[in-house]
Image (cartoon, rainbow, N blue to C red; front, side, top):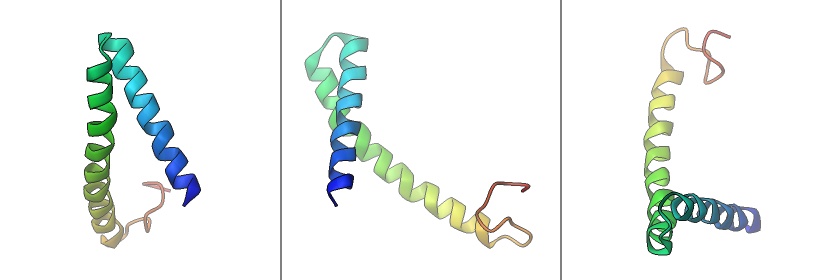
Length: 68
């Protein structure tokens, strides 16, 4: 659990830094640091659902590299 927490801190720090460097605004950097991980979490759920469907296709690589 500690690894997950520290990765979240790193992720938010990177998001804040990129937002701040690109805009010069700490407020925008902070907003990006909060919103971007939430959006990524939602995108991850849909990504996993799509890959689960791909894995179930006849002749699929079972979730491994396509064509391998």
